[in-house]
Image (cartoon, rainbow, N blue to C red; front, side, top):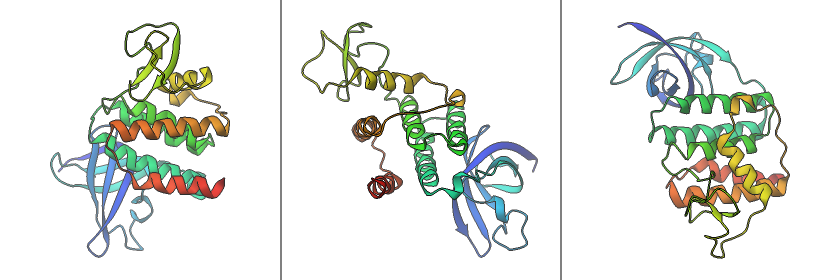
Length: 246
């Protein structure tokens, strides 16, 4: 069996037999695949330190199109050393792992990997993980087929006189189509639109007030609950983490 090289990030690890793991590896080349890391739990294994969640690198695999591939070697590209020492960062990263695994079941678009990777790299750089997660959540909606309409009024297509945004309508509403929905500030509307368009890899600074972050978070949670059907255990942990920190 030929050995292939793939760029990837481990999103899940499951213990297998006495000394091995079965890894879920999100790759740039093949999407989400299953990989056997044979003997990686052994103290002397060269795979021991590189067969864990959030390992990002070049993976050398005996690749199977159907079934488990076998891991032979990993060249780590970024150890995420800062992220792994910060409870808040690792909590948001864990949520992203779970969310991305679910979104990848709905889409095989290679752009998904780049968005996921770049978000983790920006968290590692020290940018606000909560805001980065919300940006990614907005951009993931298109892969789930339920993207927000932020270019015009979702009802009539008008690009001017935007009044608010509505979860029920699925996007912006203009003055003519407004029917008493909750009003959001112009700043809120600008941020939601920016979230849908920004290139995450090019973000160098993020600064949003806590009150605005809460309003954005509540809106996106409601939108995800209404349209995606995704239930993520790690989201509840994040909620509890926010309560402790407040």
